[in-house]
Image (spheres, rainbow, N blue to C red):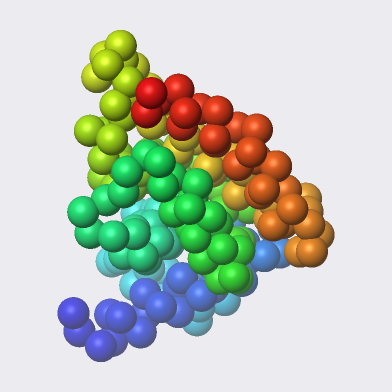
Length: 186
């Protein structure tokens, strides 16, 4: 891609993130504010994006591509879900940009569909060894694990003092993930 295009898109994304920090909701960000802060012409913005929401979707894609790249290429077995989820949570918590995106994306439909797609691509359904579970039940449980992961991460980022995060994650692992995973693999 042309360097000028990359520079322009980077400026727009950085402006979007700066506005996201100030606003209570991604829905409050408008193109006029974006182009003013990014110092790009409105028509230039529309060469690259349809609207401000598409910028957010591209930021979400970048985050999930990075998170997904940290998960083994061949995916992971469900027994290791809490370990992988813990790593994903740490990556998101430790990256200011990702933490900001997760904290503001709770009601964005693209975010939840991207999370689900990432999880589906990385969880090995054959590791769901319970012989009484249908494929649909396995997919449903995987979807619930994905949403629990998102909810837990967003909650921890928004509400918990940094010193309490690991303590809360241990509780979630013990009372939510482990019992669910136990049912799946047995």
